[in-house]
Length: 490
Image (cartoon, rainbow, N blue to C red; front, side, top):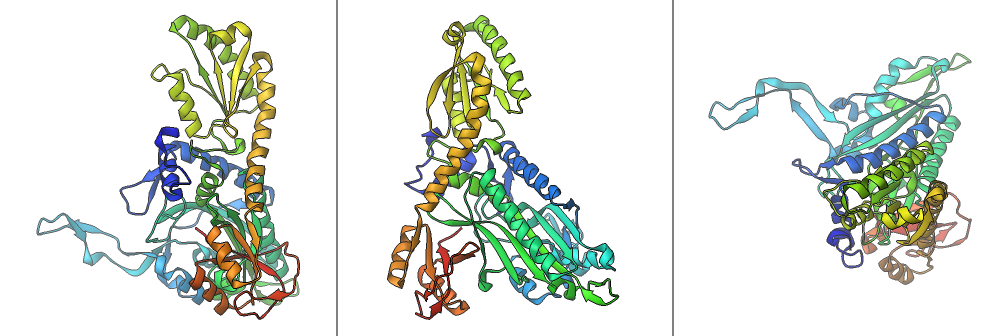
């Protein structure tokens, strides 16, 4: 086992925490509930960010940046929004410190009390819609398709690296439209972009669905979600897109003149994914030896380790490897030649296994004589001998194969862990086993809350690709028109 990581079977939570730290992704900081994302972890986030940014821009979105601080009065303008975030808000009350006259360090200067307290943003709808009021007068100003990459603060009591931290990184899109149909089309477009990113880049299968009214974003008329299944059988909400109707436009009085000269409120959407995707990536694919990274998001796709005795052998092997490195880079493949003389090859192999590098190449004196190299795959933990002249093309195809294999493994796991149930007894048994449970529900908030209280299972989503099926609610026996997905979740 990679550097003594606890096994998943033994203690999944401990396995996850140890893996995040030992694979050099992140660590807890001196600030309670906040993390330090280390260079290797940040490199993965940068790859996620770059791909998503490209996808956003291809669909006409532009990046902007809005203030970190939000006047407290803005929050009170949209009632359900303040209800949703009030308990998680960090509040700035003063703008200056001073030395304690009693010599007990630094204290707040009570003469520097803010006239209006500021909220450290938990999300930016309110500050953005107050800004849009200045940007929008006419239908000619619409649509506004803006995204921002930012940090947000939600004062979480129980935190876990990447999955739930008091401060986290994310992107949040905020769009303004002339019609309800346009805003709803935008909301659906963005959840489909998240789904495509999760499946094609993270190699993580997801279910696209609508949230129940109880689980919707605070202030939204409709919330769409992508739900993924982790290897411990728990669900993880991995991205959301919200149809906000005219709620925020009405709260901030954002109107526009239509082509016909009438005045109407603007229609809105917002959507976001966060560094929680890092947690999803780790938990969807990794094993007891460490990370398993899909090649499209791996900071290092190929690591090359020389095996040698003495400077002369290293020099000969390096000449060959330096040519390979250039050839890999010409193909757009990220490669690291690890010629450190401070660590033995065995240590390096274990390190790249732990860090989830998709492909490892070893070249020693015998390989030099035979014109071969040893190629090891991280996903299957298998090795084979490949001719040096063929290795670049071979690995180019192999990286595609690894990406597909990681996705198919996760898809098979997910498909094998969706259970259909028709009674509450079957439901309770299925929830204890883990995975998604497909069941009929009567559509009421009361039933949903009661199921959660009795089983700790939440209604993850009403899948968009649901087949219509008449049935009876598992708890109340009342009529139901379709199945919904429940699971225990992060």
